[in-house]
Length: 231
Image (cartoon, rainbow, N blue to C red; front, side, top):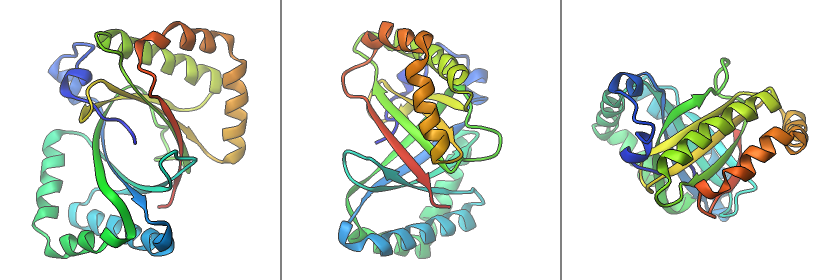
């Protein structure tokens, strides 16, 4: 379900405040789609994203999960530079009765509670052309007592994966939510690129060795989900 973590996880590398301020932050909301209301959920979910962008001047990207063990989900994501920017956007949304009405109308189209996450990117990048048509999201949780080691290993894996795949790969930590959450995001232009990347990843001995050597840094709860961009 994406990155979920804490301030302590985000600071596991002991960054200075100026370092932290320079890192991009992504806010994401995830909701499972009601299978019986699939088409309306997609349409209304995109409409809410449009409303958020109009109210806050922050572009919102909408995704749908594929090969998700919990079922098909919609994810709304937006990039912010500072916590103050996030607070300002949230205030505008809370002050809009029209937006609140739209959100409340979504309840029958989705199942369960929405999951909100705040992600801080520590290494790599998401590409320079904006969000890609597809991204894979590998989410994991640092092993107890190995926060710093897990973050250092995550940065190393990101560098090796980017070199092996020749694709944008980013590594981030959850700022709020489950303690010690980690995530790797790889961007793809099309299905052919996804298939080609999998072959390169499995064939790269350096990358596979690094993954195996550091596997003790994370708990046995990792997931790998593909997201397709809707907007």
